[in-house]
Amino acid sequence: MSIRISTSAMHDLAVTAMLRQQAALSTIQNQVASGKRVQTPADDPVAAAQLYELSRTQSQVEQFNKNSAAATGRLQLEEQGLADAGTVLQRVRELVVQANTATLTDSDRKSIVTELQSRIGELQDIANRKDSSSDYLFAGYSAATQPFVRGNGGAMGYFGDAGVRQIQINAAQYVHDGDAGSAVFMDIAAGNGVYTAAAAAANTGSGVLDPGSVVDRSQWVPDNYTISFTSTSTWQVIDSSSNIVASGNYTAGGAIAFRGVQLRVSGAPAAGDQFSVQAAGTEDVFATLDHVVTALQAGANNDTTRARLASALNGSLQQIDQASDHLLSVRASVGARLSLLSDSDSARESQSTDLATAVSGLQDLDYTTAISKMSQQYVSLQAAQQSYASTSKLSLFNYL
Image 1 (cartoon, one colour):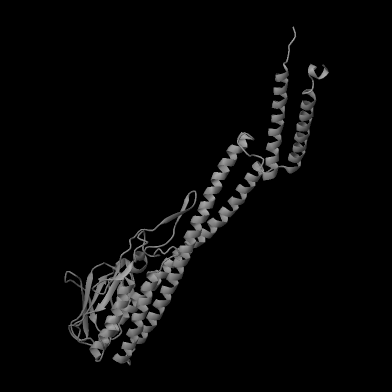
Image 2: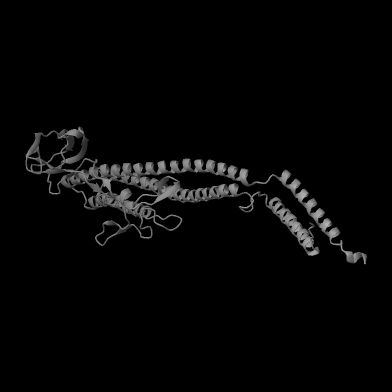
């Protein structure tokens, strides 16, 4: 039995062989031109699948880098804002200490008030700062709303919210990219954080209150207490139920102690003068500075008003220190987050290097092998073409 191959079939087989050779040569030429071994999944299905996963991971890392850069920028702006606010409060404290000097006149204090009002405006500007995207730094989620605006009554209002954005910086870690203004400037522990103390507005003597301190926190019972001078030489402490908690003889500058706290009164309080001691709540920093301005504007031209002003400024100094410590605490938190971002950046940089190495191992072309193979493919194609050229002439018609 014999098999006959038609002339057309021979041509088809030869052309098909040349096309395969051309396709193989084209593939390796593309590999050499791009430097990539895997052009399509067909080149190496297993490597192609691994490269897809590596590429997806690289895209995630790139996005985390962008997230980290944005969070770092906002936190750096916040840190600078907190530092500037701390500088303002330091200057305010100096002014309050200066204003609490008995030799100053009302005219001198008026000059201090002028600078204080300027400093309050400066602090408000800091609290209303924006980031590079024109979002307010201290507005919470309401980033497009100016957070600190004075109301019709003159009190500072907060119009942001308490939200804080969380930014993802790696597969399992998030970081807050700021702090709400309510937590930074508004919700500051009043007094020393345990109680607040103040002189009654109706006092007629020259007793000056020093807010004192907590001696034994375990003995403190939160309540509204009143230190009342029953005479110029005796005092008693009454709780909100009119129970006498403590009493004693008055010595100028001596301690008035009860329930784990002690305060001091100097000067000459009159019979009936009172000083309140209340459980601490919160007070915003703007209210603290407004109270200083109000106290200074009231004037002090006799012993009673000078004592009232000194008591008010002593309490304000304590509250300013409390606000300064609070800002330092927030600033420390921001610094910790910046440090975390820096560490995360270093870890992602190392991860990016490892990913690039893995991709290179799977995809990069071995040029020596590839060029050798390309030469072989080229020779094979030439051989196929020459073979076709020769066999295409094998016809009886050429010999008739």
